[in-house]
Every structure is written in C-alpha cells, then in structure tokens.
Length: 227
Image (cartoon, rainbow, N blue to C red):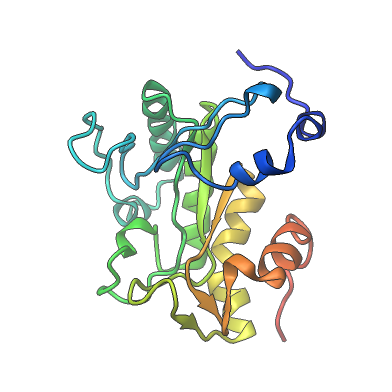
C-alpha cells in the first residue's frame, strides 16, 4: 500500500544530528530510523546478477540471473525489463527497498574485476539496456541505484586513483550511458564513483554532482555536443 510522504514536512521534524545519522548506515545494509518523524529504516541489497540479501556469505539463497554483460549481449530490451521485474519481486521477498544496481560503467579491459557488472562497452547499448532493467525493477516498487557516476572503470586503487578524461570522452563515452538511462527510466537512486576524475573525488565534485547531475538532469546540458 502506498502512502503520501511529504519530504519537507518530514525534514522539519528531524534534528541536525538525526539528519547526519541518515548519511550513515546502521550496519552494512540499512539506514537509521527516526521514530520521532515516523521514518523507518531502508534496507539495501547488492546484486549484481541476483539479490544477495543482507549477508555476504551463507545468506538466503538467491535466483542467479545472467551477468550484465551476458544480458547486454542479447540486445533484448524486453528481456532486460523482465529481469528487472524478477529482481524486484525477489527484493520484495527479502524486504529490500533498494537494489544497488545496475552498473553502467564503461568496459575498458577484460582484466577489469567488475566489468561483468556493466552491460556493454558501447554507451548507447549500455544505457538502453540499463533503462529497461530499471523500469522493470522500479515497476515493483523497488528503487534502482544506477552506478558508479562516473568513470569508475577499474578496480586498481579504486578509492584514490584519478581517471584522466577529456571533456569530449566524458560526454561521448562515460556520461552517455547515465544520460540515456536517466532520461528513459528516472532511477530513484544514484551512487557516485569511488575514484577521482581529473584529480577531484567525484563524491565531492560540485561540477559532477550538482552542475551535471542535479541541475542538468533531463536538460540540454547532458545533451551538450562537444565540438
């Protein structure tokens, strides 16, 4: 059953320390609750080709779907939507509100340890399949988390390494799958990348998170052509 949720009214009831607590997790897989504002915790789950649940090992068994690379190789948008729907049903069965996927980072090398989580090295295919996957998942009431925004394309020193990317490459290759997926599916959550891009951690980048993502969402800035 859906209920109306007034964000501004709820925020007005929450103290500053409680707001800060909402930025941290209560353990690995849940947010903190705020009983005074009737705000319940949200439960998250990893994938990427199934709903892990709330344990890394010896968890509740999960359905195993094809890895994202295999799904992308099918070029089957309807199938991607069906996979999203099935993942949503399993997430609900495990009381998970948010699935931490899909990944749409660009596959650059077969040695990338998490390349299988992305759909393709082609930006258009990557974003198109992701949009169908997200639409299927969110049709069940489970939030998708598109990730990792942006240029998180290798695992080596992923928390500190800087991806040095030209503006044209950013627009035509790395941002493009996010643009396509966001435009065509409106994911309810987004995860920033761990790494730096051109020397600045994306998690603290006003340009990426505010100017490009928040202000330009569904606007012509993400459509900008680099001459």
